[in-house]
Image (cartoon, rainbow, N blue to C red):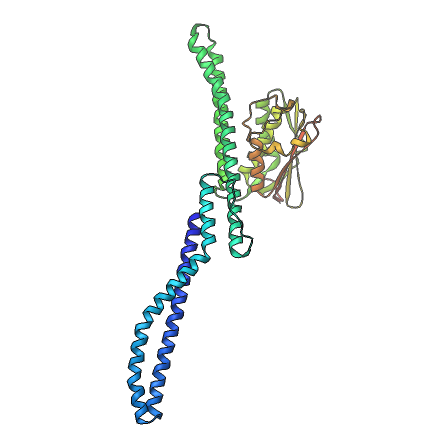
Length: 365
């Protein structure tokens, strides 16, 4: 942004000089043409004496014009340069102030002139850019701090277990130590994968995946089975699995549903229920659990990164804190929505709504 403002100043100054120089050159050329025409007319129509005088004066006029032309060009160029630099002085102040704020304090703002016009509009644009830079910087710092906090917990457990095992090798249950270490490594791997995916989503990278036919009931049943194995004592059921084939991004859809099931299984008391339905070129999937529920004030905040609720729903740890944030971001990228409903005492129901084209035939088995 700073270099762009500097280029704007230079181009404006050079353009003004070029325009003024062209004007002066045009004026000199016009005077030269007038002098030549006058000389020709005097030779043709006036008396011999006047014609001779005009003829003798014409070279003198030409010489004067040749001497004055460079001086006039240089003078006008200098005036144009001075006037342009003076007119662009507010732009220079905006550029210098913006450079200082970008380095030192993006929370500051440049002064918007009260005169209005293009300079005031430029200052407002710069302030908007600084505001976006500030929000991006704050979000990055929060992400780094939260990621460091989340990484510290499994690392601390892993380090403590290994230190105890090395200090007391004869009294260590090595099988349990290895199992605990494997669990913490799994948490670290999951968190690293989620952080990488979130960074890719933030950067807008990734080639759009063309939609492919997805058997929704079969996919939900398979993902529910995987979640039920992880949840152990939690029963995951797909209700009313009617045949349903849609065109959708399979990878993103499975990642969203998997994250919702993982969240539901970790917080459910005993049951997780999954439903699917279609509307006018829409696919709706709901995942409900019988856990402690989410207070209304936290039902939007739950989708923020590394959000931890301070109530009973947070008693079950193990997630990365990014699953719901990734699910909502993927839903938005697919042109859909992801919302949560339910009271604090009646569990939580996450509803995914995506654009999808339903197909008439079910896939063969």
